[in-house]
Length: 154
Ligand SMILES: [Fe+2]
Image 1 (spheres, rainbow, N blue to C red):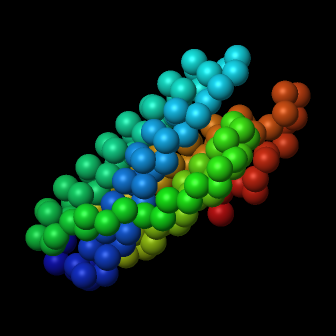
Image 2 (cartoon, rainbow, N blue to C red):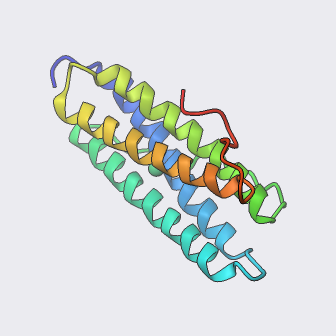
């Protein structure tokens, strides 16, 4: 692990921690605002996403202290568009998740070939976030549409 630029890596990890914590708040908030026939499965899906964001935040935070640094107590941007239809929630989720994905890719770029464990962690998170984005994309398609809603992972 001696090869990594510790300050740079901690900087990205702290931004990831803030982004994941924002995810916990965002998904929990949205889960209160789902009304209509689809409420039960959608509320439980949103709460699962909140739990997953919390788990990611905890993993990221543990890495920060493993590197001997102080975890941020801040939280990432929380925009409330006050649009609470499911499609708007999912589009916002896709946007914020792709911002987190970008940060995990940045992390990968900093640790690739330098720290096996951090590289493994970054790859696992990229894998998880891409599967998540793919799921959201499918939820945003109209039944019968096969074409992706958003452009594929870059
Ligand atoms: Fe995440």
